[in-house]
Length: 190
Image (tube, rainbow, N blue to C red; front, side):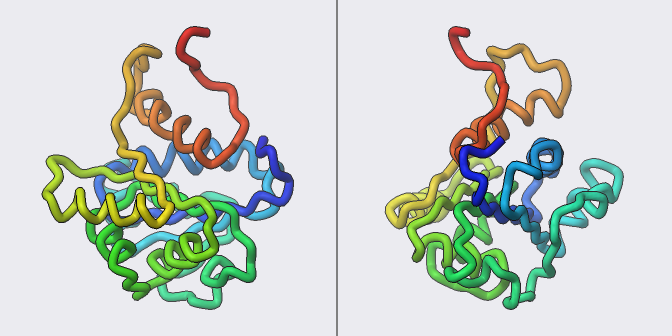
């Protein structure tokens, strides 16, 4: 349901708490995958551990997207020439955010973020930590000034979500809007 049939999206999942956000994002993209030129996926090691702990399963293995290892610098989205439009890091740990803010491209996730920023494409970081230190806030400021979007995993309640997944969807629907993915979702005032 993307506006762009040539839309290429990379999804990175880090070890921050909030695996339900990644699950809802991947579930929604799985349902609309035929509308994209490419959807690629990369997990940090900790992301898989946190997913298993929080969601009590290993369903992250079941998505049909091309999946890359965290050190695979031959992944297409490790280079600007692959013309990816969007990178969504969900959830985004404060460590990953810090490495992106300081230009440390030590794995595929941070390299992909560096590429997206240098190519002036859309970087969306679904941060999931509280409270925030001044270091976190300054790193967010740096990424915002470089063109990235900080989209905290702060759910809304006016759509009256009934489950954890519905609550997570209030964030993920905003993320998909930011990524220019057409969708049917709750809209204020409609």
